[in-house]
Every structure is written in structure tokens, then in C-alpha cells.
Image 1 (cartoon, rainbow, N blue to C red):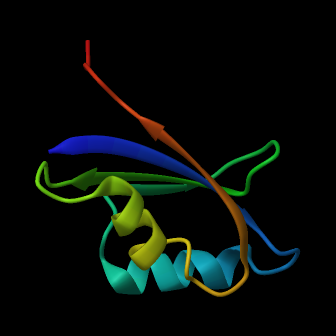
Image 2: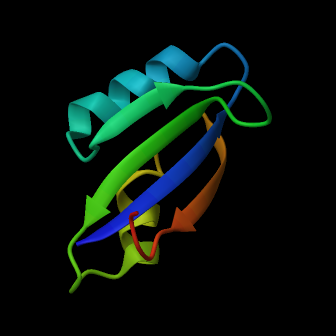
Length: 78
């Protein structure tokens, strides 16, 4: 399993509705509201045989009111 972090920027005033939709999809390990350039930080695990970019596009980036995502792949946990 690949551990992936996705930062999500939402249209103003829509962070809670975007978070609700992510929770309904049950794809996440953790979901946090954050400060800075992005509004949400999503931690998820993607099966090794899945295309990470396709998964993000089909399961996250297509949620209404998401303006931008920034995906960080992880390699090793210490």
C-alpha cells in the first residue's frame, strides 16, 4: 500500500461540504482542516496495483468545489 497525502484547496465557504463528501466516499485514513494555502489535508492508502493519479482524479479531484489538489507520495516511515 502506498501512503499518499493530498492537500486540497476548496472554493471559499465550501470546506465543510467538501470534507463531508470525502467522508461519504470512505476513501481516507485521516482528514484534517489545515491552515495555509490549502484547506484540507487528506491521508489515504492506495493499493500497490492501482494507478495513483487515476485514483486521485476519480475519487478526490472530481468532488464539486475543489479548486486544486497537491499530492505528496511517501517512501518510508521512520
